[in-house]
Image (cartoon, rainbow, N blue to C red; front, side, top):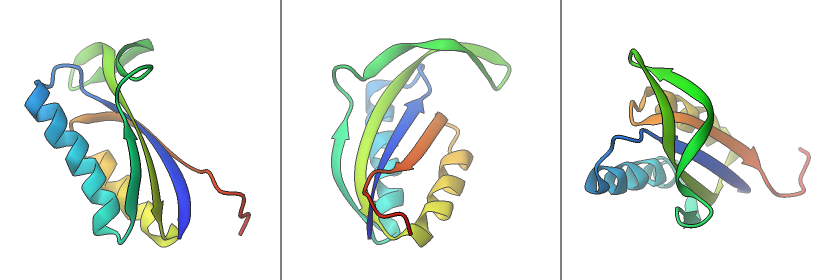
Length: 105
């Protein structure tokens, strides 16, 4: 298992309960792949923030988004499946997964 960090930007028009469900759904992508979420940060400095540039999603220009940072451990073979699920999730407008441990293999 390797240690990863994932930053996810959720659609700004999600209601609070929908946002919580979306956060849990993305964490489920990790746990369904046999991984473990070690931390989820959605408060300062994350949360609702202004985007650096507008992102066109479904015909509208979004200028804000909900930022959530996940730290997790998972086998490297599961990352491709997680990224596929994130791309298919219409509540996620952007995401990035980076390896944080020192292993280069």
